[in-house]
Image (tube, rainbow, N blue to C red; front, side, top):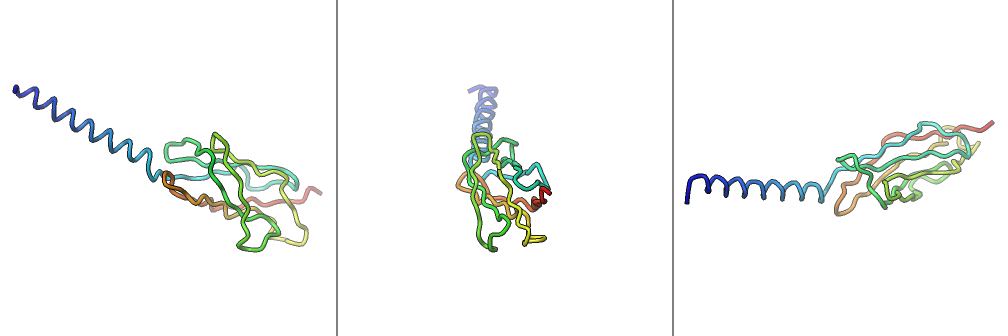
Length: 130
């Protein structure tokens, strides 16, 4: 075999290995992050967020859990992302007796076989409509 043929075979093998590594990284254990468009929302208002992967693509049909005002610590509520990775929380509750506890927080995506879990560190405060 000619020397050029060996180089071509080596380059072809290297290309196949690189494509396999890329495919594996793109389809397994992909990092995720969450963004939310508000830090405050008025009573009965709504706010939205998005679950994204490391490639800035929305992660569709996943469950996001969160804590809402008036629920005991440890009681979480679920919302599903849509086909674009977006989710909306409507009719924000304001409880006058809760004081500083009138917020939505602890937004968490648990992850699955393809995506790593993530947590949104901030809160969305609910303010009175009055």
